[in-house]
Image (cartoon, rainbow, N blue to C red; front, side, top):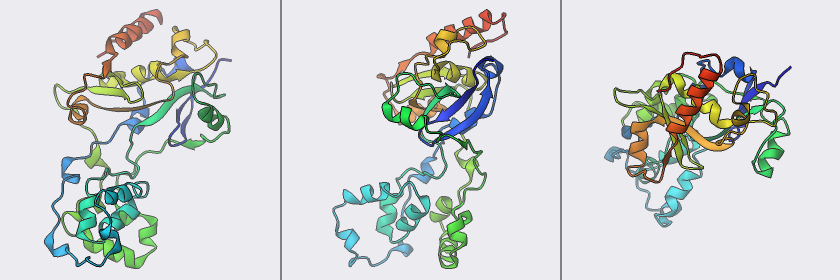
Length: 294
């Protein structure tokens, strides 16, 4: 019968559902990459100059008597719920200055523990915690396509609270708050320019492989496979079931973004030559398939 595979996001406890036998989907180009792309958060969303007319007299606020080093820590505790973070930032200009540097969470993808595994959830070389979780059927939630409009004004909690909705609506008409409250997914989509290239990054091992958009899925699949059964309906079974990045924290971004984040990334290892050699061997061993990596 063969084994059927699924893509598992350990962090978000999501699954792609059964993708089929490995040989049936390995060479295809599918939308799974869209779910894994790291967002591009424009500099304009990080660097803001508070507007004086929003300055309030907060000299009596207990929160502002705390050491400055503690305020960003408090803000970071709110990143899991963007509505709470936004309301916290709007309390006064001091809080806006604290929170304006916090990365936008929402449903925007960050690095995630990802692995491609057999449906029975056999795991190799993973922690006992992950084995326990993966064996309890907690990965039934499906990957979801991002909404095109991720404005805070669309949040059900805002729409059910007329007072909060009116207040956020007033802020949304003024810079710099409007860009934060009325977010659009397209503002954060990565766009490759000439000379740039895609990267799959492994934050666990600080490794990366370069690719073009068409080859991203193949490069990813040959790195995150995990099974105890080498019968994968295509050549390279032993290597494909022992993915070197199975269960590791990874993301997909552009080299230009990586360079901005790590000006000196000499301690990152480029494994592109190994991936290129292996994928081109797989293509040839599978019947001289026409395939060119990069």
